[in-house]
Structures are given as C-alpha cells and as structure tokens.
Image (cartoon, rainbow, N blue to C red; front, side, top):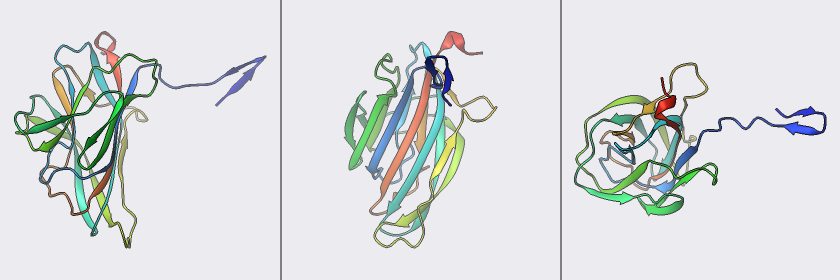
Length: 199
C-alpha cells in the first residue's frame, strides 16, 4: 500500500526479479495431448525458472470435466510437430493464440524456450507435481460456470516449483481427449532467478 513520506510516495512493486508469462487464449489442444505447452529451461541456461502461477479454464460445445496436470520433465520430447512460441510476440497455435512476454519490457529476454504441438511428440520422462480439476461448461447454453484451476506458489511458505537447466515444465492433459468445440485459456507465470542465488 502506498505510504506518504514527506514529499515522496513509496509504492511496493513486488519482486524485482525478471518475470515472464505464457498466456494462451481460445485454444483447443490436439487430442490425447500430454504437453499442451512445453517450457524448456535449456541446459546452458544461467537461471532457474521459479513458477509463481498457473491458471487454466475451458468451455466447450457440451459440458464435461477435465483433469489438468503440471509436469516437470527431465528429458526432452522427441518427434511430433512442434510450434515454437515466439518471444515477446503472439503466435497462432491450437486454433487460437499464445503470447510469451516479460512483465517488464526493460527486463532481459527470457532464457526459456516454449513449444506447442500440432502433432503430439513422444514425451520425455517426467513427474506430475501438481493437479487440478476443470469443470467445462457448455459455451452456448451453460448450466454451470466453468471452474478454473489456479495455483499461486509464492503466496505460501513452501519452496515453489523450480525448473533448473535441462528441465522442462509442461501443463498437461495426461492424454485425455480434448472436448469438441474446446476454447481454453491458460496462463503460466514464472520468475528467472540466477542459479547462484538459489539454495
């Protein structure tokens, strides 16, 4: 909250660490997908990706339910057809668009590399570290509201989810069929912390 001290106004702006976001809107991931997006922290990176927020919500032609997963992979995906998500721009993918951008345009470029997929790859080894449940509403005649999955890591005392160099973060459907007429919104937010600063 702002504090008036003499003639100056001090405002808390939160973390000074570079923060980046992947935001996708109106997308319908390929059917039976695992990684909806794959956020790679390249092996030569000098930072860790510290995940601060995930948000996922969807409607479709008919009401249904979906399970969402957040997977940390320790091996790269292979094959398939990757759609690179362009940094600091909007990229057409999954019939909608995805934006990969910094919160502050003065920050250095992200070291992450992000792909969507028009054809599923062979997925690398990984572990599911977070799960959520989506209540998918019928878009034209909703009888219930769509129920979003949201997790905010940095509001809790526990160590947040950390993606180190050579690892990958993937919001996933775990191979479920994408509902007909799906329109999905997804946000992943992370900070990039120099490795020397991590415990």
